[in-house]
Amino acid sequence: MGLAVHVPFPWLSAIVLLPLLAALTLPLLPGDRVSGPRAIALSTLTADFVLMLLAFGRHFAADSSALQLVEHISWIPAIGLQWSLAADGIAAPLVVLSGLVTLLAALASWPLDRKPRLYYGLLLVQASAQALVFLSQDFLLFFLAWELELVPVYLLISIWGGPRRQYAATKFILYTALASLLILLSGLALAFTGESFSLDLTTMASHTAQGSVALLCYLGFLVGFGVKLPMFPLHTWLPDAHGEASAPISMLLAGVLLKMGGYALLRFNVQMLPEVHTQLAPALMILGIVNIIYGALNALAQDNVKRRIACSSISHMGFVLVGMAAINSLGFSGVMLQMISHGLIAAAMFFVTGVFYGRTRTLSIPNMGGLAKALPVTFALFLTGSLASLALPGMSGFVSEITVFLGVTSADHFTTAFRIVAVLLAAVGLVLTPIYLLSMCRRVFFGPRIPALAQVGDANPRELFIALTLLVPTMAIGFWPQLAIHVYEATTTALAQTAAATLVAA
Image (cartoon, rainbow, N blue to C red; front, side, top):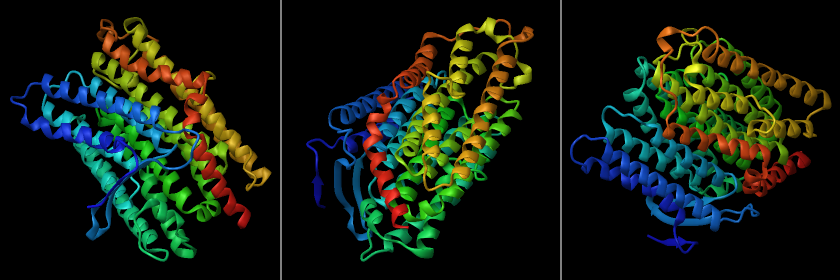
């Protein structure tokens, strides 16, 4: 087995394997007490997050668009499987985001009344799988990680979810498993294109797939990854999953899983098939606008807090599709910033929703009222998340969405009329967002106080710490966007230049 690690220490392998190794120790713990598995999970995820900060803070050059921290091992040569890991400006910030959200989700899993070893073991396996998705440079390894992360999420919803958890978990696994078949077929078709078969992502990107093969591969990736984004009309699993999942699992769904879809679209559709991407950019723009408007209108119709926030996520992820269609550095920068921003904001909002659900035992908006007096700190946290989500200036949501709009206005491959209409229609989402979010805040936290909910305890220090850890970065990025932009700017600029070159050639 040949080993060719390009760094003195295999940082990326350590990031991927540490949680998985810790998960394997949990079945060995005696009894069924919560404290042992929780301590192992929290310490492991903390150590893993520190590894991420060290790897990308000290050994990652943000001004380079090249793959870095490269590790390559010939794992199973018979089937061409390589343990090939690397990071660039697209992967690095999403790995850190996933590490932070997973750590906070484990800290938010309090109290846990049953099966603690299984619960925390699944969280640790999920942490390994999602990091491997972002860092894999071999298609087969990427696909194995993509499939592996489905299992913990399915079990975490189906075992620890709400009354309709089996339905929601089954719907989730059916959508994502069927989508995975398209991903596999498209990836293998692309791997066979070219002079020699290769599963290496860089080599696959150099293959010049053309005609119907390239189009079918692009559409297969678009549908397969669009399910996870989620993209209309492949989105219907998301409100059900969020509605039944516990708050920590909703944090993972919103903060990490949706970002896998956006990341994969950049990595495969844009990077590997730029010619088809430029041809289908108008259709992608239309799909993104439909996502934005439909998600916002659907959110207005929801009377469940978590389902309303879930529909809000559908709307906000539409900006990812719109930014990709812009095919310029501003558009791609907006895509990355929107994924980072939404990951922090949505995770915070789902967590705070879990905080007041733990006190009130209801998520029905009509059954709540006057909670601002009983839960003033919780109200302040939820309102801050809502303001960030509706793109208030000074928050990361504003910077990401305005960057996408600027990318669209400077997209020269669209006619002026098309750009104006696209911006105006996408702006409808910006108008609807404060309506459905602030009306929810008003109905939940103000109005007549419901006697049964009058006496409840406010957020404790642990809950305050989790919420602030997610909300403070949204404000920091809002005031100083370069905190996030400098990490990925070189990569998104290079990606935009490659895609734009196909426009010139056409």
